[in-house]
Length: 156
Image 1: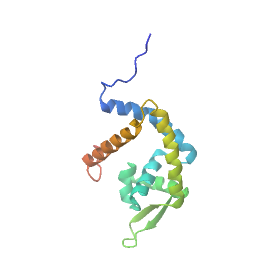
Image 2: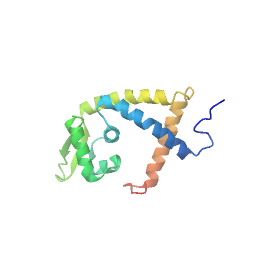
Image 3: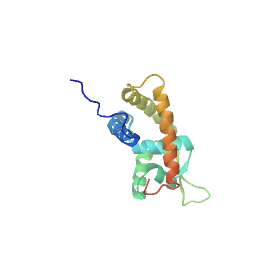
C-alpha cells in the first residue's frame, strides 16, 4: 500500500512554508550549535555583515526581541568576540554595533553548516531548483519586509 505524502502541491504556499520551517528549525539549531551561534545571533550577525555597523536600535527590529532582551543578546555576542560595541562619536548616547573579524570568520563557518542543512532538506529538488527556490524565497522575504513598513510593527 502506497503511503500518501504529508504535503501536496495543492496546499497553500503558507502551509508548505510552515511545514518546511518546522522541519528545518531543529536542523538549523543543531548545525549552528558546534559553531556557538543561535538563530537569533545569526539574524544580528548576518545583518551586520550585509549592512555594516548599525545602531543598537536598528537591531531591535532585526532580532525581533524586546529591548531588554537585545542587551542580553548583544552581551552574548560581545562576550564571544563576534561583535564590537562602541558609542557614536556624534551622539554618545547612541550605541553602534559592528561585526568583529572573529564574527566574520564565524559567519563563514555558519554558511558551510547551513549549506549542509540545505543539501539535506532540499535533496528532493532537481538540479538548479535549490538556487531558484532561494531566489524566490529572497523575493518573498523582501516583499514581506516591505509590506510591514519600517520599523516593523506587531502585525508583521
